[in-house]
Image (cartoon, rainbow, N blue to C red):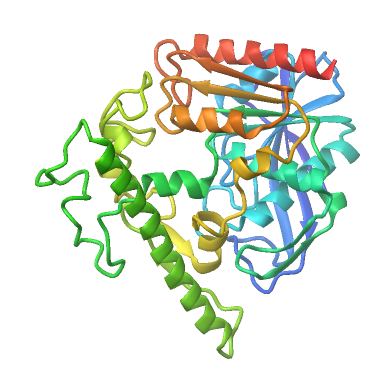
Length: 397
């Protein structure tokens, strides 16, 4: 099902077509607001040059979506590419997000683009959190096995034919996975989730009484990282116990929502020497990390049991570019930004290293931030778009 209307906000010489991709799937309850129960609707924006036909489509999807007006999306269309931003069913809200369902959404958007719109070649473009999604999706597609369940063990079947592989991948300002980067940001000073206001001063980066201050020593950073993983695993253990109680009850499909405090405590924000780059110390992509740590828009701030296991659990979440990279065969371009205030340099390096074949390329845009803002943002984005164009011309010609 697809309904098309022209919408404003397009580059000169391009058209923007907003449409919906709808499909049905069996579900015991709706995990998104609104909708028609078993009907899933994906909000899509196709941006393309009016007078330049192409058989190749660059497809973006982010787990939480909302990037259809990103400068990069518009810039690629203005440079002559056909671009699709497809929002997942979880656009704007990740508290009930199941990564396996996001992969299914991406597959449906691609199937529609190939079957209805007539594109024969697909390039997956992973922006930020869409990077690991794209890499994992491609690994699933190339394996040809489809999906049979979620990370929580709930049956969820997706036929392999609904997950067609792409012809190339673009990793743009991406991180390696939601669960890995979330754990790198998790505040380990919280030991009791029922009392998040009680924090260990020696692990609280924002406590002036903490004897460990920047620059941090390697021993402290190692201890801090271990404590972050330990906290993630404590939450996972509680989630599994709670989910086990529910499944043993008279209402096994019931859910339970909870809050996770302290989710933006990464020593790299305060000590840029840990991972040197051009980013400004004391800031992150959402602003002051001390404020963001307990603010309302933090990663996993509001969550459900099944979503935690599929999206945030360090040991259970499956959408992982590090693992997926070794399983894909198509060309991969990794574009990092040296002043990225979200996805730091190690993520760019790990993404590139995860791909084991030789048809890969790494490019770092010097001085660029996560969203290509700042006084030189246009020049930075133009550089990235030029690299993308040359890569695709070489690999898909």
